[in-house]
Amino acid sequence: MKASPSTIFGLVFLPLAAILALGLAPHAVVVVWSFWAWDPSTYWIKPDFSLAGYAAILEAGRWTVILSTLVKALLAALICLVIAYPTAYAVTFLASRRLAVVLLALMTIPFFTSYLIRSFSWRLVLGRTGVVNTFLQDVGLTSAPIDWLLFSDFAVMVGLVASYLPFATFPLVLAMGRVDRIVLSAARDLGAGFWTVLRTILLPLTLSGVFAGFLFVFVMVAGSSTEVQMLGGAGASIVSVMINDVMRVANYPLAFAISTIVLAVILGLVLIGNWTFGLARLFEDRAQ
Amino acid sequence: MTRDEPFARFVVWTLTLLGFVAIYAPPLYLLGVSFNPSLQPGLPSPSEGTLHWYAALAGERALLAALWHSLVIATGTAVAATLLSLLAALAYVELHARRATWFLVVVLPMFVPGVIQGLALSTILTRTGIKASALTVMAGHLLWAMPFAFIVILTSFAAVRRSFLMAAADLGASRWQQFRDVTLPLITPGLVSAFIFSFLLSINEFTRAFYLAGRQNTLPVVLFGKMNAGASPTIYAMSGAIFLVSVLCVGAIAVRALLRRPQR
Image (cartoon, rainbow over all chains, first blue to last red; front, side):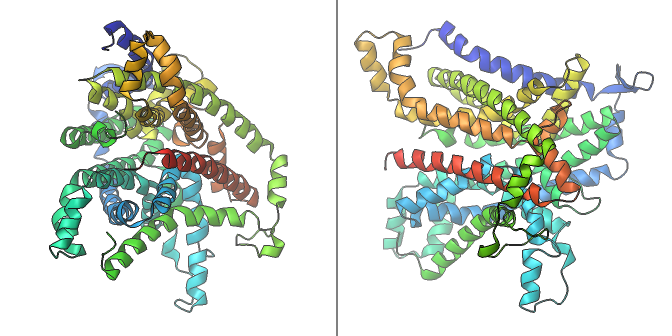
């Protein structure tokens, strides 16, 4: 039954060529170019070794944007886990089969809808004349619209969580699906309450799902731009938006240097994650 | 597990609901606003709901040109992503020891930030003298859509039991016949899903297209400009319509696929 090497080569060739040509090659070139020097005479870079791009990251408070991106990613990933863990629990253990199907479908849909439109729609909800402000004034909690709801770090965080929540839910649903229910019933029969079962049995058994969910959200937020562009205040930034701004003035060495650092961090995290819990294993029981 | 304390159940369901509200309430509200005849954003009362702004879309030439361009790009992306992901999934099944590595290679592009991928690809294309066009956007979108299409097709391979193929082989079927007569019919739903998902990913993609689009921008790039230049009700209508169509497509596929999955 084993396929011949030529069969495998034939199957691998086209997808691999696309990934190498469109993915690996351009990014490898960007990494190499990030070490080249700027040439004012051609408005392009020349092959002289230079760390000027990296040095420029330390100027003009750019490193604070990188730092704040990491903080945003960390915070969003933690919030997503707090919401996604109960969601996965409800889908796996509480919901009837029909409800579980509906909830899973509702979690699948956001992957394929527009992040732009979803971020934009928060403007209608959080704005000065938006739903939240109108409601708060109607019930008399505030007399004037609250300004920090929109175009603020708060709005960005809300948008990020709403955008990337399903990236945390899916690994958790897969992890919980593999938990042997008999183990949980045994704990119940021996008198353990919900929180004890959660802390001593369910959480340890689903730790790989927790790590995977955290990692996915962290990585997606670290590379996001739309939420900040749509919901951030004046001067709000995140690494991807900073790259956009740097490219607007055609500062290639700096843009390449930032990109290289982001790529290194993200790919490093994904590889560490893959090494500790195995990305492919997440899908193993589905794809034989 | 029906013996959870009421308080625990309450916490679990509240947080679950909170997540779904955060995902769905704002876009659905935007969809509702798009039926409001007034220029001020707000939900219309049921009696005054109107399709006025949808009719007004017919006069928005820039939006329609962008929509048409996006449809062409999405179709091309979906065809290429489905075919390449099918090959990749077949390779995954045949590769035994090294399948985890192959999985990582195909899925890794999913994690590369759109801005960086768009910047890298557009810089290379500009430097090699390739003009930005529908093809360059498709190139960027292909890399973005392939991981999703690959995972969807891989999931559909669960229907292809090893024993089916062995039986076919015992009866004298060649590898090609096994693929054509056994595997392909079983994974066809997966291929259809992968096609539709890739199509939607492409038509909704913004950051890569921002860098890779030529003279004719794609729909999300045009929408982005108009959203920031003082949103008008026609923008709500276009956004609402795109969101609704995406939800219906994915929802139908997801429910169908989940209901077919064997119970455990």
